[in-house]
Amino acid sequence: MANKQALNIVKMKKYKQDGVPLSMITAYDYPTAQLAEEAGIDLILVGDSLGNVVLGYNSTLPVTIDDMVYHTRSVVRGAENTFIVADMPFMTYHGSVDETLKGVRRLMQEGHAHAVKMEGGMEIADTVKAVVQSGVPVLGHIGLTPQSVNQIGGYRIQGKDAADAKRLMDEAKALEAAGAFGIVLELVTEEVARAISEELSIPTIGIGAGRGCDGQVLVFHDVVQYASPYTPKRFVKTYGDVGELIRNSISAYVKEVKDRSFPAQEHVFTAADGVLDQLYGHRKEKVANNG
Image (cartoon, rainbow, N blue to C red; front, side):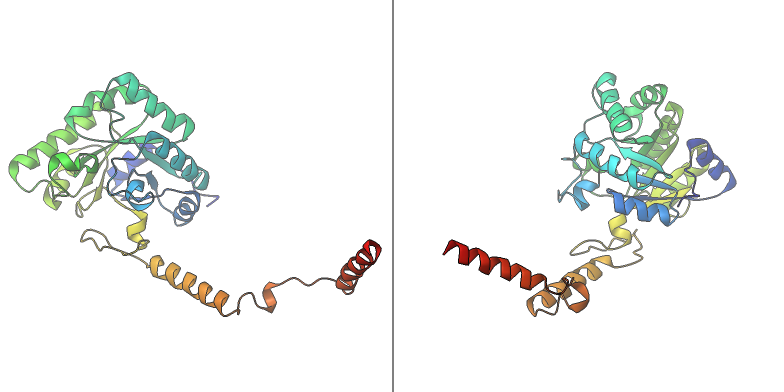
């Protein structure tokens, strides 16, 4: 979209004040980013979920900073007029600040991201503050944090009791105080997500966190069912089935190759009259001379 202007963190906060929801989707490559931008998406997340949906891992943990730089760079080329956030992968922001900033630098300088996302609450607040002070916008992420899935005991709904609700609220406030420009709330009960959204001055973006958030994010592959087999998720709405379309299209191609109906007349190029005569004439002449 040539006339589309990328959001910035100031505009996003104004969206929250005005009650305008933010739309966010993941993308991991150039054509997907192009299509998302053409569709009018507000933000693109280059998520470490690429480990599951693109690289074939069973979790996000094996994703490296090299993976994230490579995919972020591809997405930025496809969506030049969209605000793009890149995930900091597992264990790249839990050591020293210097080590964290090296990863951040790579995502910003080599990947050309506009911001980074980090999972966690109070335990990473000081790190978030240091990154923000270095001049890099940070999107927080609490609730279900896939990088900590082994520690929290699986993909469990967060905020189901009073103690957990208070923990989430405290984490959200700590991230806001650290300078995060927004927070993703993943698999959080609707009541708690709404309470957090109302308490904060920065936007919340929900995934499986109900209707009270300031925006929503979904994984591209879930939105269009780009998987085989596709596993439905309660908190996801699918808007198409490109997996079936792709499978059927390739199947039809295979069939037509096998029965020789492709390529057909309209798919071939024709040589000028006399080309074959000259070709074979030269061959006969060569054979005669060799004889």
